[in-house]
Image (cartoon, rainbow, N blue to C red; front, side, top):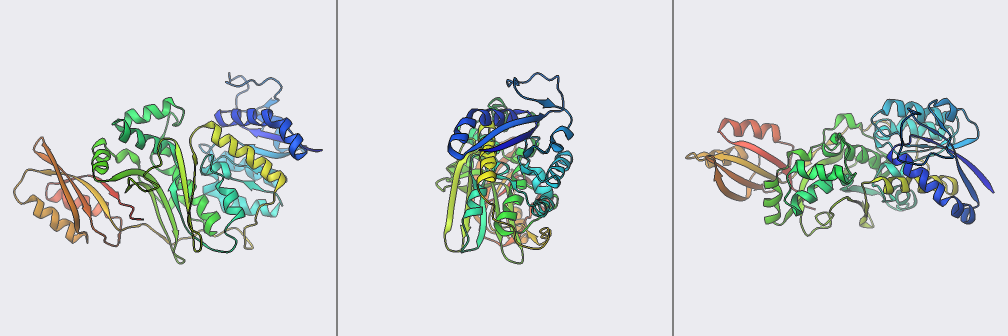
Length: 424
C-alpha cells in the first residue's frame, strides 16, 4: 500500500472543498489504486478564523515551514489563489526545491511565472499539475498531455471565464443590466466581491497564457496584453446583436502563426447558432484546432468550488499514477515577443446627433480608418441622438478604437461600444 501525505495550502472555498473530496474518496482510492491518501497538515493565515468546514481531525498551522519542511509530505495542494501571487510563487518554488509535487490552483501565478516553475519542476524531477487553473471541470491538461502526438495544434479558443459568460447570459436571457447580472453571479458564488479579474478579462488572459505554453510551447508575458472588459457591454448591445442573429460572448483566441501569435481576449460577437453562441450560464468551452483533427471542442462547468476542487483531486491522482509528457528544451521557455491583435470585422454602437450631413461624416471617418459599412441599423432617437449600429465588412487591421473614438468625436459622434465580430 502506497502511503501519500498531502499538505494543503489554504482553507478557503476551494481548499475546504478539496479537503472534503479527499476525505470522501479516500477509501475508494485505497481500494481501486492501492494508494492511501491522508491530509497531514493545512496551512492557514489565521488559526482563530471561523470556517464553513469541519476542521475536526485536521492539523492546522499558520507556519508555512511546518508543511514545506515536513519530509513526509510529498504532495502540496496550492489553494491560495492568485491575489498574493508573489507569496504563492515563493511557496511553490520552495515546495519544488524540496522535491514535492505541486497541484496548482492559481492561474495568475502560473501565467506570470510558468516557464520558471516548469523548469524548476523538471530540474527537481517532480511535477506541477495545472488542470484546475484552466477550464474548471474540463480536463484540458490531460487532453493536451495525452493527445496531439502526431500533429501540431494551430489554434486554441473558446470561453474560459464562466463568471463573465454567466453575466452575459443573464443580460441577454433575462434582459438584466450589467450590474444586476453581476449581483446575481455574486449571489450564486460565481463572482468574487471584487470581480475585476473576471469581468475585465484578466482571468481569461492568464488561462490563455497557460494554454499557449502547453499547446504551442510558446510563452507570452500577460503584462504585455490588455484584455477588453465586459463592463463596456450595454443591454442595448445585447438586444441588438440578438436581433441580428448574434450573441455577445467573452471569447479568448490564441493562434500560432509561426513567427507571431495572434490573440483576442474579451467580448465579441459570434453567430447565435454557432457552438460558441450556445454556451450559456457558468459553462466553459475550449476548442482545440489541430492540423489533422480540425476542431475538437471540450465543454464543462467552469465556475464554482466543485469543478475546481474536483480538477485538483484528479490532478493529485494523475500525479501519483501517470507520468507527465515532458516539455522540450534545455531551459525555461523564453518569452515570445511577437504578439499580434488583429480583427477583420467590427460591431459599432454610435450615438449620432440629429444633424444634417453627420452620417456622411461618419462614413468618411470609417473609410479613412480602412473600414467599409456592411450593414447599418438606426434605432429610435433619444434626447436628440440616434442609436446607430454599424457592422463593418472585412478589413485587415489592428485595433482601431482609439483612432475611431477621436475621429468620431471631431464630427460630434460618440463611439458607445466597439466589439470585434468572430467570423469563424
